[in-house]
Image (cartoon, rainbow, N blue to C red; front, side):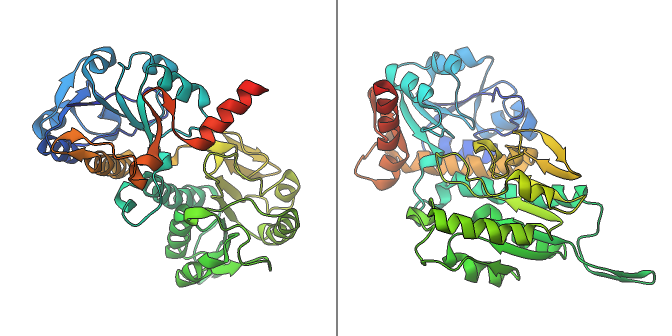
Amino acid sequence: MIAAVPKEILPLETRVSATPPTVKELTKAGITVQVEKDAGLKSYISDSDYKEAGAQIIESAAALYTNADIILKVQTPDIEEISQFKPGTVSISFLQTTRATNLVIAMAAIPVTGFSMHLIPRTTLAQKMDALSSQANIAGYKAVLVAAGRIGKYMPLLMTAAGTIRPSKVLVLGAGVAGLQAIATAKRLGAQVEVFDVRPIVKEQVESLGAKFIEVAADTKEGVGEGGYAKETSEDYKRKQQELIHDHISKADVVITTALIPGRPAPLLIPKTMVQDMRPGSVIMDLAAENGGNCELTSKDEVVEFNQVIIDGTSNIPATMPVHASALYAKNVAAFLLYTLKDGELNLDFEDEIISGALFTHQGEITHQPTEELINQSKDS
């Protein structure tokens, strides 16, 4: 079996789906790994590094796709790439299936067996395959560093001969993986950190990191979805949430938003009216920019200024740390691929919750029910 590692085609994407250590793992399992020429350069991995690990270097993507049984990517393949996949190919990448139904339809038509790293179940057994978490961890860390570089203040409390410098105030909206890493990083820099999340269950984690948890009094099940993800909340809860966030955001120097519901537009947490009441020189790092943003004024992949407040809509922060982002993502992908193998061959056990959970198309059928329902709805309308 041949696993192909193409060069990522999006201009802002610096990550790669396999690294020399994972090439060695896959090769040991009996898989031939072919890497497109210069695929790893933006992650500082040379072709010679891949060759030493046992990979073959292929001159072009077209030649790579001709022989590939499995295609490993970071970003979603586009229509042109998909058109080069041969029938029966297995594709593994990040793909928000409910937000890219045209690509799902194109894969099913070939047909391609499609797996999305977005759909990996959040279970103990699947932890080493959880690419969303590995990349969110990086995003939370880097967001704090970027924000610290943008505000015109120190982050920590300082006692100087010229007077006392008060610590910066950081507000984190969402205490998932990205939020928790943002909290830890901001605390290490000496900031005062407050955290809001719709899930009361995360309060203990937040406080263990030294941050203050702010919460809306509500039903304890409000906002708690399957697998530890957040879910939509009631209108009454949203009103109380907005009032609480407004009060705290007006005092913050840095706001980091991380609220995402898989496959859905990001919930609006910070309307324009809130930004108007923020301190001049403060910064919003919107980690939900890829799905529309948690701030009304967020513009994807742009840094904008409104009323002397900076709003950073960088949608792919992990790509700004390509060495470790690629290392972690490649390990996630390799762990998943090796999990699907038996005696060196693919063994797609659809009774297995990890395999069936990550699968969205197979043998011409769309297997991910929410995606199929969305496609059928669009056909009927």
